[in-house]
Image (cartoon, rainbow, N blue to C red; front, side):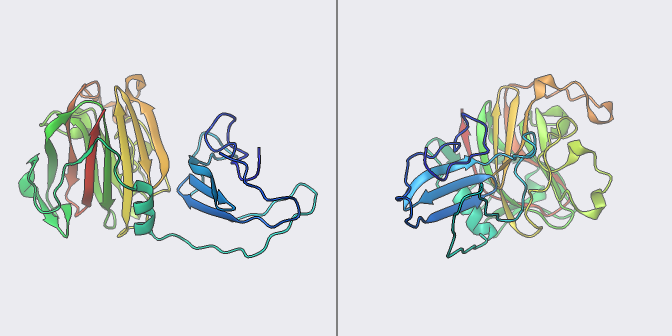
Length: 293
């Protein structure tokens, strides 16, 4: 099949085999260019695209995402192979976010103009626009939500957390009540690893469907840096991708155990508003766009 495929991926998964055979003749030098963004892998071999943004699986535990950091290794199977001219450049957060997001595909529409809260409702007095971002005012909170309702959709958003920052994405929010319970769910936006949250229930970690389904941890950027997140909602299924890694993929209709045995009466809602669930911390959101499915 040629060199460069993600050999340890499950058969049939994208990237397992290279898109084309791009190897030079035996004895000639080949050049790889590999870009790793989260678990998304893009590879060029001798100038030809052979893997296009495929997810690299965690070989050691298929149920877990790829590790957030790790060494670069060179491997042989007993025969001679040579490497030379090895260079590594770590990609800064803003560049990584831009590459992961790219240009919003057709069908996405911006729901924030970057200047004011036109098009938003709810706790508008508790939020402000600062440097092109929506920010919850310190000490304030409540649900700020779109004026339009959404059934199935994909949302793209960038967010920035202060130390110990806490907010959330309100999914299919009915316009009143606590989004975590009255809405389909609140997807946590939280500085999970801060010492304030040592005793956190796994269903409270960043990206979790609050109180219902736990996300994978360890993929947030350091506080003060911008994160890129994409959320897909289809029927009762929710998928959360953070900085290029799928951290939550769940079907809320199958949830039967809840944190503190607290029911979530809104989890079966078929449509509602999209918004933010402020908890008094100056968490910021920008570049918010939604595509109806």
